[in-house]
Length: 291
Image (cartoon, rainbow, N blue to C red; front, side, top):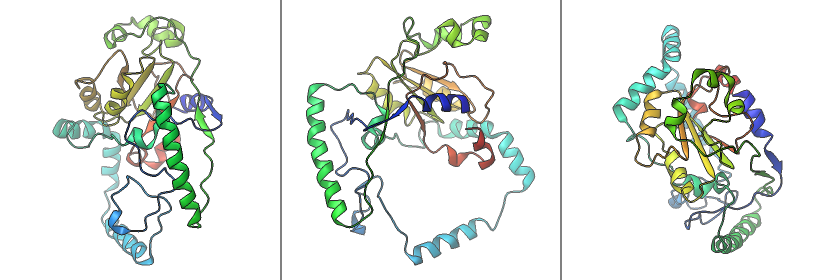
């Protein structure tokens, strides 16, 4: 994962983040200008900026942390749960299937930069109108004497990776002979999404609660491809069996990102976006060194 991360970072360049809103539903205020002044409106946004705890709230939180830490898991059980984590997650998905978490339909509204720059003229017109709303909201925010909102400097450039041949279906890649697989996807030219020009990887995809909101949007962008992985095979099977799963534009696979020696089903340096939603909190801090 370290190698893929380093190569993915090489695709980033400094500059203004292009706005790529694909949906007609936008947040009423951009990130950086959401200041909660009326507690009754706490559910108006998915998130708020510059939130500060009161002394009472901080004391209550510390008390709860202390209570939760009073009973600790025995060391031998910690080792067991860590060693057999995939088995326990498989059991979790066997029980709850895809009913436990809700689809993250807010993801693309809050972070449109996940999507490729591929807008129609009418979308650009909506973008200009929305930029005006953003500017007004930001100016209002600045007048409240809060910390200045920094200019966004990072944007993703399309990868210049391999585009040989047509995108293959899942069955094509499952039948690759072992000798070709040993050579690696770059040498054989046979890997999922080889014909794509914009590629996303979601790590820890679970049952697909981020996968399918993204995939449903990408159906209008055939040059884009979505990879998703989870170290629980049960979760990956749920993704593959979903009615919205398209092997021509998505490849789900089992993978443990903490194992730096495991290969990925695509060459290094071709990813434009990497997502880790609620992943790091599920990994022991010592193991995050490999990510």
